[in-house]
Image (cartoon, rainbow, N blue to C red; front, side, top):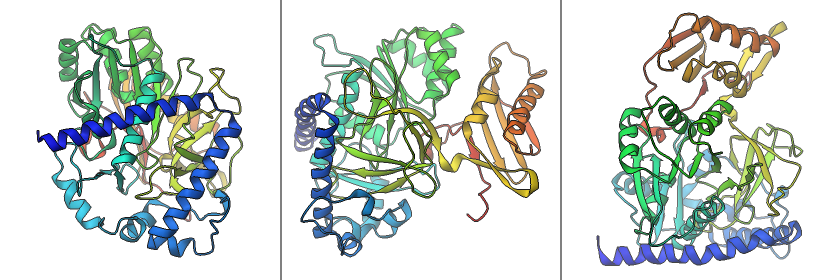
Length: 468
């Protein structure tokens, strides 16, 4: 490793450590102090974007920056708009999308672009991959946010006995989770990095050999490993389990609790927002770190939904990325924000539920030809509750609904397909939806696609709503 590169990376992590102290101090703020901070940061961000970005200069030509900016008065943008206007949207004219794609294709580690930028891409699970750029200070803020999440889970600096941490996820530095693991691996912890696309048997062997104290992975992987533990093939004793990047169903949470006797932490984050939100030790919901980003939970028409109601998507505003300003940027995550604060005393809003993405909704025919939107949670409730089922995946297309199922060990296929079909048919009927043709297929394992970071999308619908 080159000395100059190593020193720069060390400085970025050291800066993140100093930032962590400021972030933790904000836990004692009031909601009023938090709102005032957001207002100042938003004004600074909008003014910078308007001054340095040709795209925003035109978009915000009528936006005044000599006083507070009202977020709701600003236009909304989606991923396609950001990518189509990338070269004009960024505030450094040296950043060109075609050249960034070349850089991404050559990444092998935590490498800098132009000596000062980290370039990342999203998984593309929603159909379009995005490219996102952070300068060194902005990246330190991302890392500080991840340190904050670790602090809330009880993972603090420990010497001489270093934490043994296993991280299972994407194996490419193009993706934010792998990139953070690369950036922060300075030897202060013992880190085992494993690929989410590996066979479970290979993961079991590696975990048994390493014996991690902390397990960080997707909920679907954690659930499978929990089953391996309960069935006697895995024998580890983690003190902390954290899951994120996928929907975590009730059954997955129950498996983790039963296997290791602990309640898993739930991480919610997006590459675009650059903030990685997590629940505290009370596990009452995920704290939204609103000092790093603003999350507007809205319906399909971009109208705010009241706390306690399920949103259709989120309008995300990153408060610290001045290189690629993202202001009221559409993210298709369906969240429910709690109307009540957490009794831990932190000022941040709580997310009661993370329910997948709005493009996971299946639109099925109903009486009189009307459409019935079926939320993924109904598939989870109908399919995941069967004790014979280890994991499953649902595909809805013009031919009907195909369910791919992996069964638990020593479980017979006999009768399971009928149970699954009956459960799902009853659930759909209760929603007023007509049940399409259904097909259940049993397999030994569900393969994970490296191009989507090894994530398992439980429900996929290729049938769009009318008018879409």
